[in-house]
Length: 363
Image 1 (cartoon, one colour):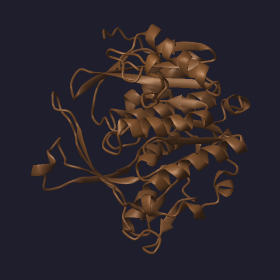
Image 2 (cartoon, one colour):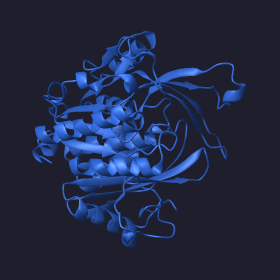
Image 3 (cartoon, one colour):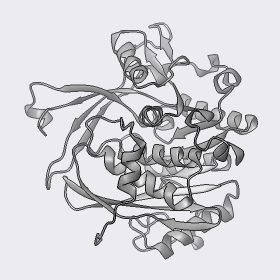
Image 4 (cartoon, helix red, strand yellow):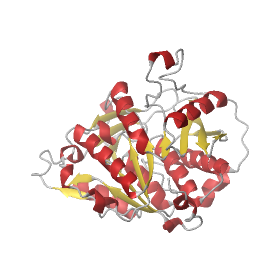
């Protein structure tokens, strides 16, 4: 990773040009924590992991671009208009014709918002969406990535179709060739592919990644004799101690020395309405542990994306390592108080004020 790209832009949010690639979807939510099976109205908004990160960074002042394929109809145009209204550059977005993407549809998902002891529930309707049907051989990757400093990808998009998976791997290789800083969030979605499929694909991405987020879907221990047992899932505990997480980070770096930063947030769900968050981050040879943040939830969707965007922002600004991880968790905590997928917070000082507050939270 070219370190000057993380430090030369300190204090100058426009100094780094950021691009991310993925699917944006229509989100339909019954109002007032309602259940889908009895709903007679839905609140409409737009979101998707990579789009959420582009939106959050743009609101924080980063020069942020989003690439996707959407149908050339009212829904596709409305989704892109929402991003543009949040200062996200969408010039590379492809508005596909019916000939290019026969089903000509925007992916959709339905959200039942949890409350109290009832958890949230997501139902996807995104099969055969425009991005899954488009022929990516038409895309000039040199032109797409030209002039950018940072590329972010996630494990959601390759789960959509084999063509999306091949395209993202090509993007990773081209970004490495062009010297971009690359961040990657595994973002496992059990409703899109199996654990084994996600693990094997995401592991193929690791040699091209500088900043690794959400470490769960990676097969670090490939040999049975080197595989952790007990409550560790593929070697990764869901709520690790500092010692456990430090060991995991160091094993990752030993096997993939190209990694410059690894971070994961850890959630403690007290109920569907109240959670706590903290995070671990490995950076410059040391593991850092964030503060714990406890909060009531208005909308949980996009919390992980807000964490990723917060970390990327803090890295670009040249914050100290501990401030990086605390800023990321504080950004995620604030997102949980905002309706919709994206963190529209544009007041950096409100996040910094939260991250400096004193917390006395018991796990």
